[in-house]
Image (cartoon, rainbow, N blue to C red; front, side):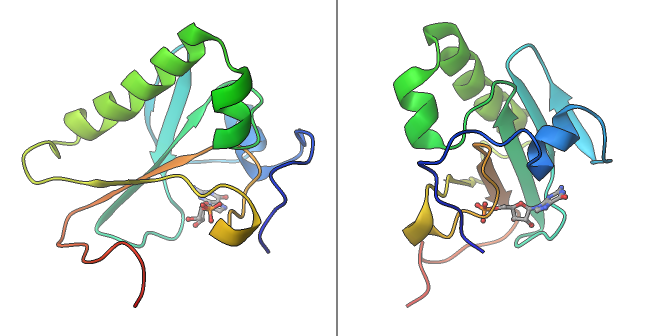
Amino acid sequence: MPVDATLPYDDSNIFARILRGEIPSKRVYEDEFALAFHDIAPQAPLHILVIPKGRYVSWADFSATASEAEIAGFVRAVGKVAADAGLVESGYRLLANTGLDSHQEVPHLHVHIMAGRKLGPLLAR
Ligand code: 5GP
């Protein structure tokens, strides 16, 4: 079910639980600002999710209220995860669903990194 990204942060969401180590994930990167792990249902040969460590529901929330350090740290982490995975030459797609029309399912900001094949047009046609 898509989530309403204008609602307050819910500490019981699945990515909050992954951040707290309450449920397992296949982690690939962690620093002060971000955690990256494999998507449980990959939609490309490589499908990694990068989340900020702070309590942000969506891109809208994060871009409006996060500190400069959190924003810089998160954006650099996304780039580092992709670079460390060897994706700079072949290319990759970033996607951040935000709110109801986007079909965001988890109410903690996450950027999808998808790669490993020709991904085709952005949206189904
Ligand atoms: P959204 O639709 O919100 O942009 O993407 C949510 C993503 O989270 C989906 O691609 C889904 O497969 C992934 N996901 C949902 N639950 C879990 C989980 O428990 N663990 C991991 N690793 N990924 C999850």
